[in-house]
Image (cartoon, rainbow, N blue to C red):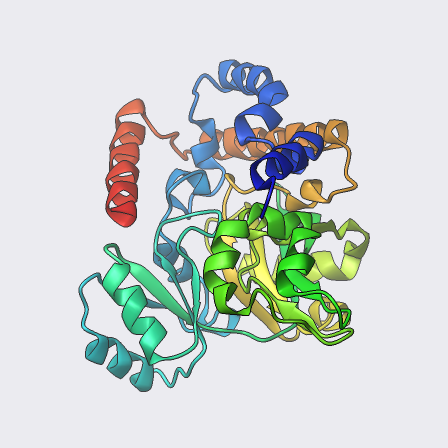
Length: 348
């Protein structure tokens, strides 16, 4: 597509949701230093969730987290070692009664890194051949509503509160009976930013014309870095929603501050505690993703991020006073070393 590079540049320039994290987080650095001074440790956040390594700030193992969640609250989650032959993986799927499609993703990773929806044995074989790190397999859930629910409970309180809800709109295009896929994608900013991947995926269909009102999902993974539109869903927050996540979180030891990424059938079902399919549980390093709504003002995002870290500080310092230790510099260095090695291996 002509002018693709320039178009990408201006989309990112005029929409702060695409700015690099180090720029978006600039106002938080001074606040973090202030909290560090008050807590007397730069790693105070590690005490926010005693049930997760680093409090869930970075590089935590997904399978270790899922192992702490009661079976009735989570999907089947299988850890597969790299190099496991296709036949063996197929046998594991059969033993656990999993059928295609399935989701494969690295045990450690973020922002949709190497997450794939696998439709058949051929795609699974390709994923296995490319993969060099531990990965997990989960059943694919076709519930239409995907959400990120951020919850916190102060340790001195019996009840907590949901303080952020993001609705996820998967990257898609809608036909008009005239335009080709290429033309429809070129008029969709989110598709433009994913152009290379989409062109590789739909290369032999780019000149196809979709029927009027026909929808085509371009990306099945609900991650902002992969083109998903994040929509502010905070209007959903009420007493019923809080009660549902009080009950869920009470059953997971050592968790006070987390974001549930989940699928459900309908808002009303969610508030009744029904049809909840937890995709991931993220700790203090997660973001209140409603801030990436295209209509959300940057100044309000800064306010919400500062409020998030205020909550992390309060929870962490209280837990520390009750005997939960902060990570030491030596422990952090060791964890970073593991993360770096894992990332290098995953990308090699």
